Image (tube, rainbow, N blue to C red):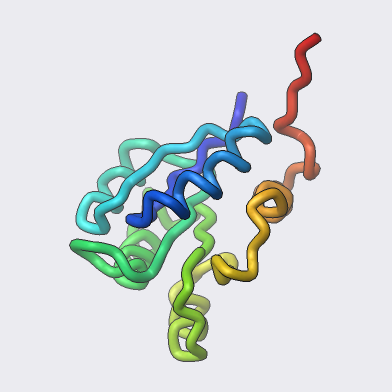
Length: 133
C-alpha cells in the first residue's frame, strides 16, 4: 500500500513540480490549496505525511501546524514545512510547534524530495518504485 502525502500548497507550479516527483516514486498525493480547508482535509484523509507551505490563503501554515500538533487525532502525523520563507523566526517557530523538518523550496531538487520523505517515514529510498515490463 502506498503512503499518502497531503500537500498543502497554493502555488500550482510548485505543487505540480514536487508532486510529480513524489508520484513517480509511488506516493499517493492529495492536494489542498486553501489553508482554511487544510486541517479538516488532514483529519479526513489521514495522510502519512503533510507537506506544508507557510503563506497560504485562509490560514497560515504555522497556524495549521500548531492546530495539527495540538489535536489528538493528528499530532502524530509527520509534517514537513516546504516554503520559501526561511527566516530564523519562521524556522524556530515551526520547530517549536513540532515540525519534523523545514525545507526551502529553492534548495530542494524535486527528484531528491522522495528520498527525504522516505527517510522521514522510515522507508528505504526506493521502496515505492514499481517497475512494470
